[in-house]
Image 1 (spheres, rainbow, N blue to C red):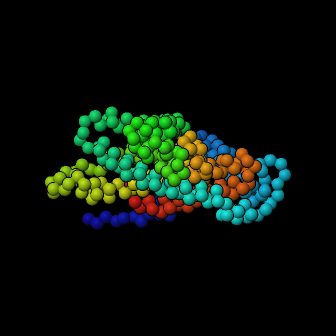
Image 2 (image 1 turned 45 degrees about the vertical axis):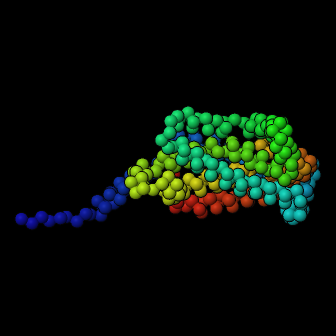
Length: 311
């Protein structure tokens, strides 16, 4: 007995096509609540960030002091930036400080994460203690450390006879940056620590069990298992940390105020201080250059993490 298959008619094919398109549209349908969240956010972002940024970029090509009359002067402000010793020094300090702090933060945070995910007692209380600096105001932290650097440590140096401790590090133009690195790292480590803990916990325990069976030491497990499998987390911490440290202001303001002299002036401090002294257009040009640099760093982040994301 043979079975004959009737070929689909044109009407049937059209009906099936309409049904498939209808199903696709239903799957792509966006819930109205999405727009209730999206539209206000876009409006606020536009009014609070995008519009002021465009206005600032516009005035960077003028001689405006922030009010009154102004006129276009082209690239004069941008050209002057590269011959301004204070601006050049602030860029050198900010990038140098950011690089050193990123290295210190990630090394310490990674080692702490390894310790706080190992088989030790009181892991949970210790994790809580280590993240406390993240929730304290940077200004408060900087004032506390300023007292320590300016009073407590010199007093201890005098009592103990340690000569190099008797002078406040904040008064030394060659070493004041180190105090800023210490305080900034102290507050930034908890954030990186939480990311590294999440990364370590995402690694299957069987990997470490197999390494133990093969006789791998803890150092070998760290260098050959933990770090390679956490590459995405490390890159994210490095890039986010570097971009964050480029905006350093409050810790520096509380610790040194940019001093001694201008040795610890950051880019953000230069821009903000210039806005209060009638250099509005000039500092808008400075801010625009800084904005372009941060965009390039963001693009670098995307290019490095593309295809390597661990999250």
